[in-house]
Each structure stands twice: as C-alpha cells, then as structure tokens.
Amino acid sequence: MSEMTLNLTELKEILKSAIVELLRDNREEFSELLADVMEDIAMERAIAQRETTEMVSHEAIFQLLEPKRRCGY
Image (tube, rainbow, N blue to C red; front, top):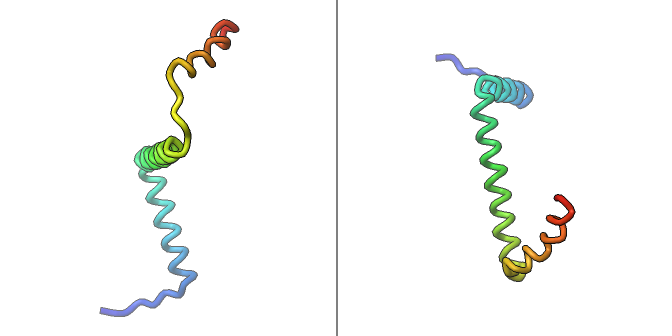
C-alpha cells in the first residue's frame, strides 16, 4: 500500500468539499438538526432566565394583557 501525503491546505479543501456535499445531499435532515439545536439553545436560555427572575402570578400576566385585548390585539 502506498502512502499519501496531504498538506494542511489540501486537507482543508477536501474536508470543506466533503462537508458541502454532505449538506447538499442531506439538506432536509440538516435543516431539522439545525432547528432542533436552536430549540434546545432557546429552551436552555429560558430555563436559565427563569432561575434568575422572580415568579409572577397568572393574574398579573393577564392584567397586563387585558388592555391589549380591548384594543384588538
């Protein structure tokens, strides 16, 4: 078996080409994966934010929303 030598630039180009081909061939799966990652990040941030903010009652939230309902929003 013969040895093959690649320099860093060649390796980068081969990897870049392989990744582009993978994304192109699996666009739908990649989109779903990206959406899942974004949802996970948003959930993690919401949980972290909840841990540092004070609790608010449902009544207080609905009181804030009530004026907007009357305006047609």
